[in-house]
Length: 84
Image 1: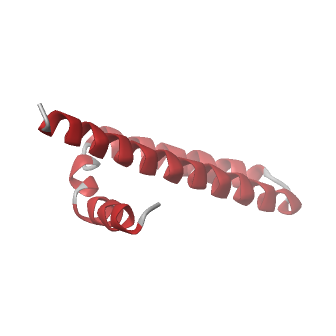
Image 2: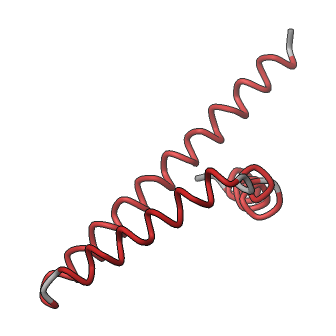
């Protein structure tokens, strides 16, 4: 991501996103996901927990790319609307 976009992404993530994620539905979804991860992790043999860690890391990285793409698309759309 470009440096300016990185700065915007960091600012938005740290200063704006939390207020959008403060609803009960989000918190409950996160709580359930964490509980399911803990249950899965505890049911795996020790040699497979590394595979789960790698999977979760890859999913998080893909999700980050998706969020960055959404930010770029939203900025582009905002610029287009501003020109109307």
